[in-house]
Image (cartoon, rainbow, N blue to C red; front, top):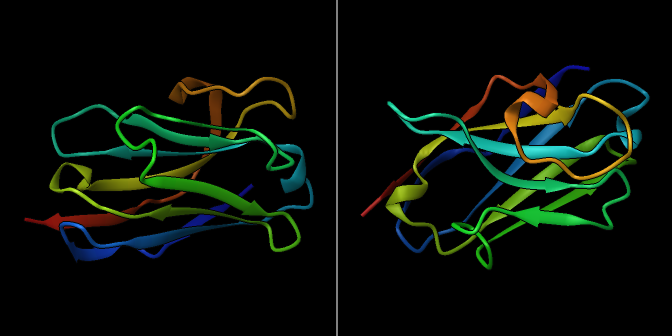
Length: 125
């Protein structure tokens, strides 16, 4: 599976962005998807994940209530809508596919196999 993120950019604090992640492959709809982020000098951290059907989601406490993950299996795309952005949200954002199909939602990077190249999100104060 190949993943390509887009939608990053520079935004002022309080602003919004929507990230997209387009996936190749016919089995996209069988896999949970996740968004992670990595700021300079920090480890990659979990942001949000969504089940294969879109029926279940889970968020990091730091983004709960501000970010929304969604997916369109017909378009092989997963989204991350981000509102009320803060300077501490500045990072490279990556989408990823869980290593195994279906099953439980997971939140650690080691449980995800395919990764995109990342898209930069910068929030100015």
